[in-house]
View 1: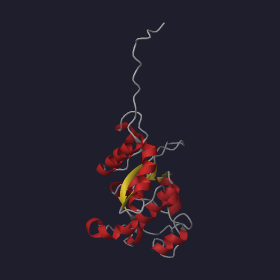
View 2 (view 1 turned 45 degrees about the vertical axis):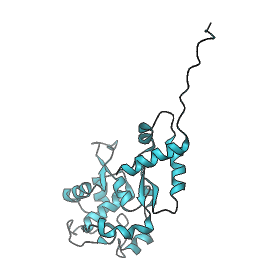
View 3 (view 1 turned 60 degrees about the vertical axis):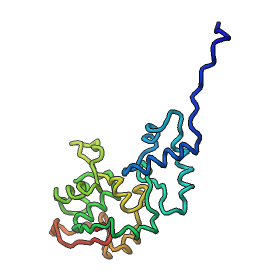
View 4 (view 1 turned 60 degrees about the horizontal axis):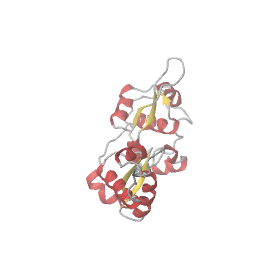
Length: 215
């Protein structure tokens, strides 16, 4: 029988939600890469609820110069989209991509996870190693899981950096056909995957289209 004089065990009490909100804000402000809810929980005291804190934090930042946005599976503090022009002189770096790189990137974005063979089938021409290496170096695509098919080919998927660059939460937020044409990506041509390129077209063409993927 338990001793009645034995003191009750002290239950750990999580910090108030307002304090948890401040913690999440501090972590997101100090990190450059998006943080998942699990990663936030790993840095906060036991018993905290970073998911709930994020809800309150997003509301508090609504209409401000910066906001709490979702990037892939993580969260980050980013400049409000309508104020991006204020940062152009500091962050814009023109990097022209060949049409081969643009089409390869578009195929990965819209068909991920996709193998090199599938990219080549959609484009109608082979994909050079340099094209894929350039997109990986830019951290816009990365290796995904291997497909459960003969040979276990590796797949490619877009990165969180790609989503953040274009202000997307997930790849499902990619623009549609009309928006792509309006942005100049398609140049009034059918998108990759609709009409393959002719077999004789050069892979490393210098026909660059920087309007959408060139910054």
